[in-house]
Image (cartoon, helix red, strand yellow):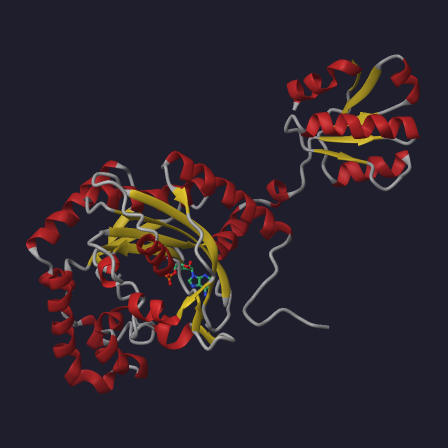
Amino acid sequence: MITKPKGTYDLLGVDAKISNYINHEIEDFMINYNYEYIRTPVFESTELFHRTVGDGTDIVTKETYDFKDRGDRNITLRPEGTAGVVRSVIENKLYGNKNDPIKLYYNETMYRYERPQSGRFREFTQFGIEVFNSDDALIDAEVISLGYNLLVSLGLDDVVVKINTLGDASSRENYTNALVSYFKPHINDLCEDCQKRIKTNPLRILDCKVDKNSEVLKNAPKISDYISKESKERFNKLKTYLDNLDINYEVDENIVRGLDYYDECVWEYMLDDGIALGGGGRYNSLVENLGGPYLPGIGFALGIERIILKLKEKISDKKLENMIDVYIMSVSDEEKIYALKISQDLRLNNVITEINGNNLSLKSQFKVADTLNAKFLIILKNEDLQKGLITVKDNITKEEVKVDESEIVDYILGNI
Ligand code: AMP
């Protein structure tokens, strides 16, 4: 038997249902917040991720799927969504008008060669948004609160947003230099990865899972001492906005995010049990660094598999059971013609309907209707049909009524 590649999964059953539910909610949110869908290629030039995500990040050094195509080009399967969107914005000159923010979203598979475990895959899905052409803290608040509100509306109401500021480019540089000077004499007390991070990505030492509780890390310089006055004011403004929106947030100076391109605010959506559902940040220099004009940006990505996992723990089995509106029962050829026609009328009126598609006996059809948890049964009988009538049984109260054939759709719509 050929099995699926390590770190991948088939989306099916309850997980597929929850995934559909999440996607519907995302679509509704995107309409109400006025974001446009964008889809970029699954693979891009390898160079794109080196120049955006960064040479020193774990993602680029250890986790990308890189290969040469048959034309000898260096190709990488996208490990995250922002780089491709930024490349597309530049290539298609989606710079907008002077005053308009450009608001985009994606919901796509990503690829990282990580050690698979619960909620961690090699092929996974991220829903993400990116807003360009605004450097206003108001937009920071809109973006952060959008992700929070989406998670809460999906049913994850214990989510907390951990926010931090990395300051502007010069604050970040000063702080990075301070970290390097501080860590250098302690280099042998750090894990192997962090010994490399001193050269490649010193900020990342702060959220190292291995060194997290070491004294060296605890006594490291604090980022808040290096943030410029302007960046501090901006961060205070953001906090005021988030207070007004009733967003459950906490300032956490250890949130630095793994990617190279962030400045100003960064954040993560966390659950009580310490699981990160997603994160984001502002990236005001990224478009310019990739050869575009100055175009500030901000965005986040949420991990769909982790959301499915957490929702599955929360939603009761009852809610996940199949619940269809109507099961139509038919045995004779004439009844089957009616069953097909009525099912079409009901389905076109948004009524979830099933028919006897396996030539079952009436007794077996009752059983199937029960397993499908049908709210109503339409029991077609030749003698009723000759009089223009249809028998409808409420499958919960077990009451039966006869309804005029021409009124069946209205009757069902009025009672479900
Ligand atoms: P990141 O871009 O690494 O901050 O990831 C954002 C979110 O995507 C994380 O908080 C996770 O929810 C999700 N995520 C990242 N990597 C994986 C993975 N390998 N498998 C499943 N979800 C992931």
